[in-house]
Amino acid sequence: MALNSDLLLRLGFAIGVGAKETIRSILRMVREDGLSRATIQEKVRLLKKEVPDNFERIFAYAEGLIDAMWEEPADPLRPAKENKRESKPDGNHQISFCNKVTPEFSKRMEKLRASNQPAFEFLFWLTGVESKGIWISTAINAHLYRNNYFLAYLQFQNLSHPVPYISMSPRYNVSIVGGTSDEHEFLFPVTINKMIEALNGFQKKWAKKTDTGVIHLLPETPKDFFEAIMTFLKDERNFASHSS
Image 1 (cartoon, rainbow, N blue to C red):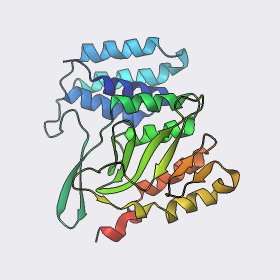
Image 2: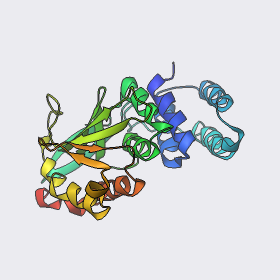
Image 3: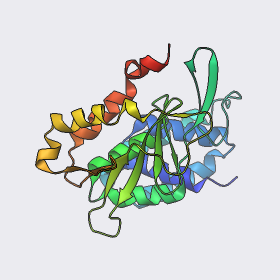
């Protein structure tokens, strides 16, 4: 069985930033998708030739995981190929979520790596599988969800320029995933404005807001801002008002 090219790209990203939990999750999906140990070892060896020597430690970690995982029986309860998540946001009502990342989105995200590392790391974090309940659905841009709540539309900007950036909008593009609802009020405008103002983003002009509520996060946007969003997304208490 061939290795999904998107999973291989994500594995390369994970190794590049040392994201151990993401490496583990991707390898487990590959293992349970039926790929042989020899095939994934060869793919990792090819990746190893493309990166500097100072990544030796994280490659050793990945190779150790491969040896350990391919000796374990595959988990028959884990769905193949997609990252399925279940939640109970409304009483006993269950919804399954899929973290869908297209190759085109991954290519666009890669363009941020060299020139806009904070934005790249934020998007890469969103593509990981370790943060239960936080997921994105992508085509060339992304809809961001927390459980079954749509929160924001993330869009790449200025990709043809040397330093691209992203924007965040409270309005979704065309439609959202079935079974979800538009709950952008959790983030827009109050919460996200407070995050920006706490770092003087509007005054320093790394954040610019349009009349339609779209916030352009220019290349100068600090890592602290993206970390504030990640902290907000991980805290279930921020979404409790709709879960009781």
